[in-house]
Image (cartoon, rainbow, N blue to C red; front, side, top):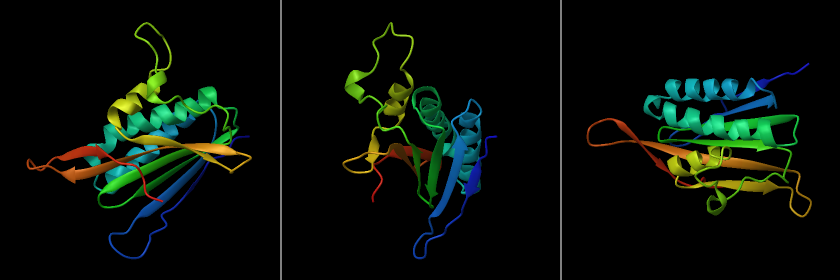
Length: 164
């Protein structure tokens, strides 16, 4: 029997509050949709509606990669949201299947491997963190979307590496 767990929010004190949410779910065919819908709902609730489409695509690609390529029974998605940005980390227990960096993306005729090219195109800065030191026990692939108002009043997206 597969189970999923959602925890949050864990508000921090200070300026502006950061709300942290965590979804632990099975590495299953339905999980990318669950993760997309969760992040979209969180962004809508936080007033980042203009960021929903980009975030859904990025989350879908990262979670689908775990489901299709990682030797892991479950994954964890963490989303940290404040007034200006969202940071998303997708973590699994398979450090061996680390995503390729941009220099090794597929050629024009390749049928697979386009997901991280999309992540790279939307998120000019994203990354992979391997966990566990000398004896790795997992990895996280992350991105940050910053929502900020443009002169026309609409949100526009900028990407930066998370701190910490």
